[in-house]
Every structure is written in C-alpha cells, then in structure tokens.
Length: 248
Picture: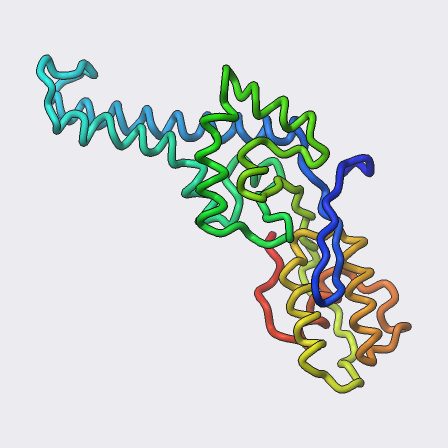
C-alpha cells in the first residue's frame, strides 16, 4: 500500500486514533467494474431463464400484449437486482460488495464505524446524480477533486471508501503472559474498540496500539518483542472482552 495515499484520521473518546488509507478513483473504478459485471450477468441470467419459462419456447421476445405477469416475473426482478445490488450487499456484507472485497476496500462512516441502513440508502440513491452525464462523470470529478476522494453520495451520507488492512495470516498465536495490572471498565472499552477496528488497521498501527495497551496492563514489554499480529490479538482477547477473530 503506497505511503502517499490520502488518510482519514479517526478519533474516539477512548483515545485510540487510527489513520485509514482512503481509496481513490482507481480502486473505486476497479471495484465498480467487477460489481457491474456481476450484477449485469445475474440480471441477464434471470431475464433469460424467466423469459424462456414464460414463453415455453426458445424465445426471449416479450408478449404482444401488456401482460402484467411478464413485467412482474421477467422484467421487474432483473431491474431490482441491477439497481439494488450495491445497497443490499453493502448492508449484508458490512460496507462491502464482491468488487470492493476484491479491491480490498469497504464503505465506512467518517468515524470509522460501519454505516447504518439510512446512510447506505442515501449513498446509493445519490448514484443517480453521480452517474450523470455518462459513466459516473460527476462522481469521478468529485472523487478526484475532494481531499478524501468522496463522490456526491459519500458526502451526503457521511461515508468514505477506505482500504482494509490485511489480517494476520499466522496459523497460531504464540502464548503471551497474562496482564498483571487490575482490569477495569476503561480497559474493557479500550480493548473492545481496538479489536473492533483491528481489520481496518495496518500491521504497524495494530502493533503500536496493542503494545501500548498490553504494557499498560502489566504484560512485560520484553515478552512482546517479536510477537506477530495473531499473538497480539489473542493476548488482547485474554486481556479484554472476547471478540470474533479478525476477518481473513
């Protein structure tokens, strides 16, 4: 990941500030093209199969009369697939789509959290504006011109497209000593927030924040030397609130 990438600094009440590399026009275009091909193929497949079943023959021709069943079963579902693809998948996949996942990016709110239903709806409704006049012309100009590479829909929804840091691929975590200092509610909040943001952080940021927390609560610093991401994550889990393992 290039060090020259624009970054969004996300603060919090617990003091864990992280810098999220913001995706630019290239990553957006790559993800969009993959998603466009997927949704187009799915929509065409539905239309073709439904039309063949409706006609009862090898023909995709519409009926001569305005048959409501044709529009309800053959035309409407492909249109819904095409236009609702991004919204539904971003909602189900927590800011991702297959294209975004392949590009290593996902939609986040400007505070670093996963956008809610309303924000994702606003973001995708504004695609109608961003896509004007052709080939996302307005959206592309906004992405290039804005400091955080946001299209109009992102500005309206308060979202950003950010790169996801690759999770540690270590098969097993080395055993680290348990914390010696008393564990309190503040520590629980700090650890829970760090583990929640773990997939968004670079390896360097993960290590820096994890070492700060573990050292603060009594884990000897000499035992942390050389610990990999998986070991630090496992040690944080033992220190704090159990959390799901980082996504692969």
